[in-house]
Image (cartoon, rainbow, N blue to C red):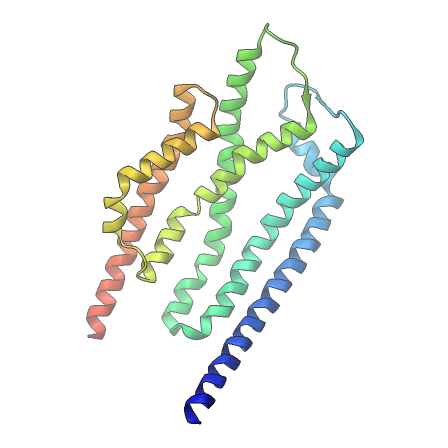
Length: 247
């Protein structure tokens, strides 16, 4: 009878935890919808900011393409605003199970997540995007008449910037997983050659079929992986030292 009561209590605890998580995710969704609406409202200003460094005329082929431009800009705005809020909600969900020191340290991950995501977007937009676009325009010079739709141009920007925004989070993810004991710097060093292969493949997928451009895209990804190993090593040493002091 007592065993059954314990099982029922565990089920109730899990139900409460899942309910709390669902509530936090719903709030995050609400923030995304609000920020999506704000991006929709200010889409003209954001569009003009992006368009100002475009050396060619953007056109649309139909009314639905205009809607897609609004949706793309509003979605990116929503992601930027929601990301730190979602990170804080997830931290608040797991923080009761952490020590005071772990709560303080893990709280620093929240602004870091947003900053790295933003840096990845900026890196992809101001550096990688221009390299790839100039290469493609040089290929088309004198060969065909260039006509770019606004929809395709914005999709092109997303294809370049969003992957780098995600890749820039890798060092932070490595630190977090190391702090949980899931990975170690030794494991990352052992799998380095496989990681490099995957990163080179990703570099070829993100860039045109030109060796130099593929190298330019792949090198920052490899550097990010090496930074991840360094950050993982720092966290690992601290974790080992802490475990040693506790024993």
